[in-house]
Length: 117
Image 1: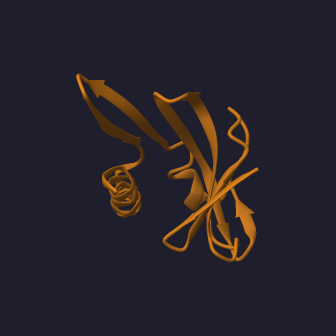
Image 2: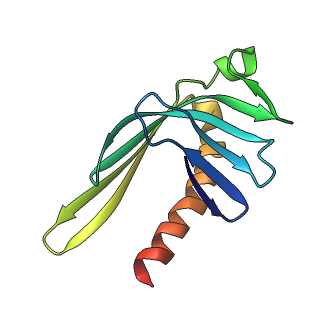
Image 3: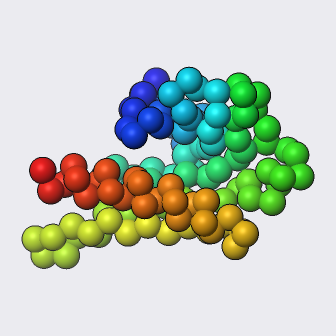
């Protein structure tokens, strides 16, 4: 099991396609339940979001969750000459765009800092 903590969030995964991946707060009680839909090291990683954790309880089938479960978050490394660009794609219900945008801003800032330092 891989555990990575950044900016108060914890990612736990087995790195297996179809396996369990959770993005949670530091107490492991609140966050998102996902799976890896596709992985091709080091070129791309695609997550499919299944539900959420609230106070330690997993919800993958309430009406609230059904509105966005199945959303896909994809990361691609695109090499062009001597530069590598991170390309991110999200396929989700428009009502949840702000939620995903906020998460990406934080995550992409981490990637930027790691790659420049």
